[in-house]
Length: 86
Image 1 (cartoon, rainbow, N blue to C red):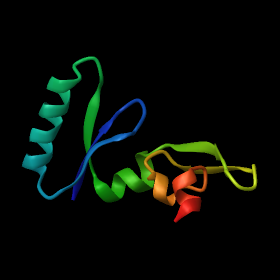
Image 2 (cartoon, rainbow, N blue to C red):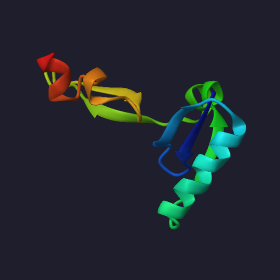
Image 3 (tube, rainbow, N blue to C red):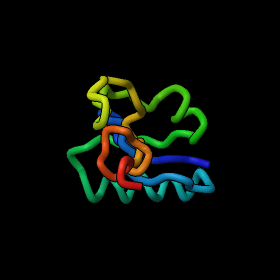
Image 4 (tube, rainbow, N blue to C red):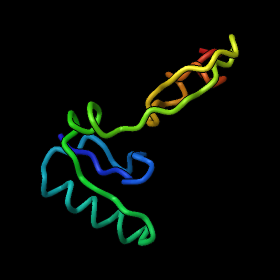
């Protein structure tokens, strides 16, 4: 599996791509849509273990700061109201 991500922010453009060729096509698509951004392709395991950035967020209920991955969805983030409403 491969992912296409923004090099600066490590935000995912597209994830769960099955082949290297499909990942390259997704990379070209991303570069055409946003020519001012730099994108790259990585194997999913390598991206999640070594590349993805961590960001500091504040727990909505306790007010305590904590670190989480930049691509954490709102439903899984204690910093989000969606997390606490489920």
